[in-house]
Structure formats: C-alpha cells, structure tokens
Image 1 (tube, rainbow, N blue to C red):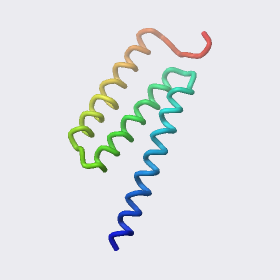
Image 2: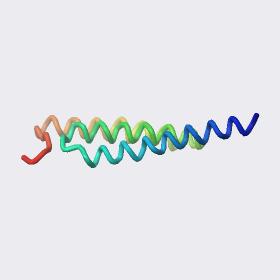
Image 3: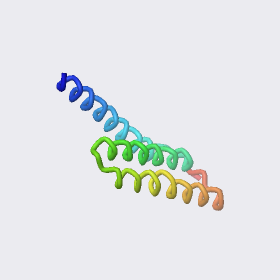
Length: 89
C-alpha cells in the first residue's frame, strides 16, 4: 500500500513541477505586463506548495508571503502608477 501513496505523491509532484515550468514560461511569453505579474504570482504559489510537500514550511511561508503576496502587490502598484501595459509600445 505504501507504493500506491509514493506513486500518488510522485504524480502530484510531477504535475506541480510541470505547472511550475508552464507558469514561468507564461510569465516570459506574455506581452502584457499585468498577465506576466499574475503568472509570476501563480509561480510563487505553486513553488510554495512544493515547499510544503518537501516539508519545508518555513520556506513555503516565506515564498507565499514575499513571492506571491508582497512582490505581486508591489508590481501591481508600480503598474498602476506608471500606466505600463507592455507590448510594442
């Protein structure tokens, strides 16, 4: 029965790692700055989930608070103050 749990855990970790790569690629590929910021926020949340799975709650909490929370908020304030939209302009 333990091999079933291990296989399930490996599958969950694999899916999260794939989602991590997709969100990082999306953050790079998006031409709109707001979409890139949201993709980076998703990246930070998925990374925090991986830290929890790997039993590093202190790193998970730091990543969730700083990466997904504070940095996203600072980026959004900066975008709203500068009016940046991205693209070719």
